[in-house]
Image (cartoon, rainbow, N blue to C red):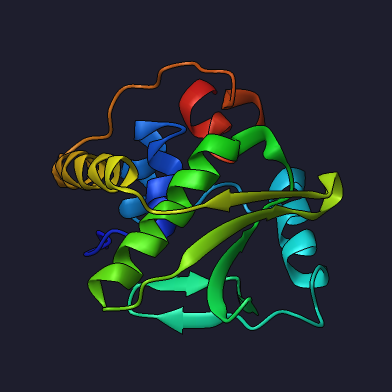
Length: 166
C-alpha cells in the first residue's frame, strides 16, 4: 500500500532521509523491536499526561493542544533534540495544514527529557519551504524504487538501518 497523502511523519522523515520517506510511504515498517523506537513510544505515552489532549485530524495526529494567553498552541513531543530540525519542520507542516483548514495557530516543540521548549511560528519563509518539501515528497513517493541508501549521521539510530546496510 502506498500512502496516499503526506503526513507530518513523512515530513519528519524527509528532513532526515529521503529513502525513509519512500519506505514509510510504501508501508515498509521499521524494525519494531528497536530500543530507540520503543523509548520514543514510552516518552510519548508518559509525558504531559495531565495536559495531553491528542487530537486526530485529517491525515495527522497532534500530540497536544494547549491554550496560552488566549491563543491555541499545537505541541509536538520528542524524546531528544537530536532531530530538532526535522521535528521543527514536522510541526511546521502541521501548522501549514491547519492553516489550510482555516485554523491559524502557533506551535511548540517539547523535549521533556532535556526540559526544552522551542517556539515555532509558520512565517512566509517556513511556509514556502514546506510547499517545496511537499512537491519533493510526492516525487519521491511516486518512484517505483526507493532512492539508494546514503549514509548520514542518523543511520546508526534508524529503524531501517538493517534494511539499508545489512
